[in-house]
Structure formats: C-alpha cells, structure tokens
Length: 226
Image (cartoon, rainbow, N blue to C red; front, side):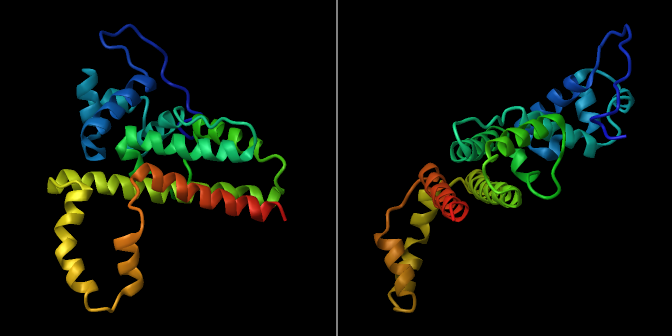
C-alpha cells in the first residue's frame, strides 16, 4: 500500500506526539537549511526528539519521506488564472518560486511523477484549464511546460550553488573569462557567437525565464489554434 493510502498509527499518550505532517515538516526544515544530504530518518528523529524507530511506524523508508516532502511542497504550487495560457504561466512561475524557496526540490523534479494528493490537485487544476484543448494534446502541452521549468530552475540553482562554491557571482565569473573570450573571438572563428556575446542584451534570470516561457506558450498557442 502506498504511503498516501496507508493509515497513520493511532494517537497515543506519549511525551513527544508524532504524525507524518510533523515528520515531513522537520525533514523540509533540514533540507532547506543544508540540502538533501542533511535528511535522514535518524536526523529527522533527532530534530523531533524521538527515537529513529518510532518514525518507521509512519514512514517505511527515506524514499517515502522524499515523496512526502515533494508532495508537501506541491501544496505551494497552485496555478490559477483565466484560460489555459494564464494557468500554464502560473504553473511555471509558482513551480519556479517553490524551487527557489526549497532549493533541494530541483534535484527531485522530473522522472516518474510523485502522485501524492497535493501533486494530483495541482495536476487537476492544470488539466481542467486545458479543457478546450484536444484531449491528445493535453499531456504533451503540460509536459513541455514542466520540461522548460525543470531545465530553467536546475540551471538557476546550479548557478546559485556555483556562486556559493566559488565566491563569485555570475557577473564576476563572466568578467574573469572576459580576456579569454576576447582572445578567442579575435581569431575570427566564432563570429556569430562573438556578435551575440558583445552586442545582445544581457538579461537577468527573471527576464530570461519569462521570455523563454513566452516563446514556449506562443508556440503552444500557434499549434493548438490550427
């Protein structure tokens, strides 16, 4: 039986009451502070002031704990809007916001979906907004938006981690590469790339995300309007 369907143990009078919600909240606090490597049933139990074996009455494994953590964050992803385009934009932006607030989420997005109740509620809201779209196109459309968001947030989180590891922000890193790129472009071997690097607008992450999302939504709209 999946964790979503398995009932919790009955409440009993103990010094430290426990339930899945408290366990998941403690695990998320650990992950928010120090990443997924900081999450284990032993460490969660220590935060809650209980023995690790008590947690196994509620959660069978770390994989189940991760599933519950991801689903809890899906409660923060509530796409809204009038019409499919606004809902898909809201889906993208709220997913990105959740990943920035919970950096570890970027490591768990993608792959086989975690179909907990909050994830299903999120999916229901999105699919319902696509009610006028051809039935066979609904999942490819949602998958395309999800793939764009996952790729974008993983790149952004990777940049954030690189900044912490190197002590250089993106502009400082780019400046450190400037002399090398100037020498390389001076050879004339990369004229198109040199033009873009030198002359195109250098957008921040927010603008880059929104423009890319516009490109994607414009393409979806053109396709489904045929």
